Image (tube, rainbow, N blue to C red; front, side, top):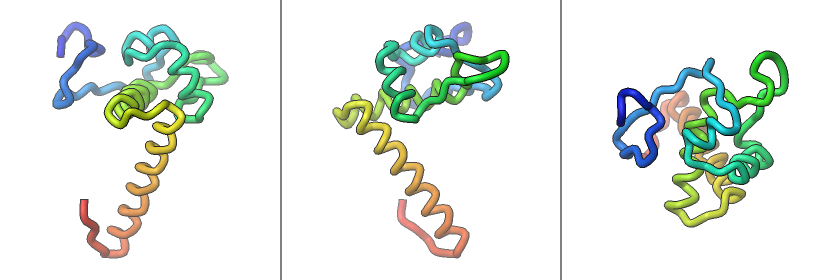
Length: 113
């Protein structure tokens, strides 16, 4: 990954991008950083995966975690050959699985994976 541009297209899976949650993205900058087009972003907003800040100085922008969520959604869409509506459901199910595993660990139950 380029040290001068942390949003390099074609980054390798082993590379890590750290984005501060205080960082915000405009629609255009999130498109550029994630490789998504505006319609893809709009779908992710419509499906509830991404939220546009509604008030304050950052109104109309996305928070820093939107980049990771968008990249993950696009990667899943490509890898699983799914549309973005389905990808949002898959991502919600993955979050639920993680929560259930965490609950089981708190109860002392070991899980596989």
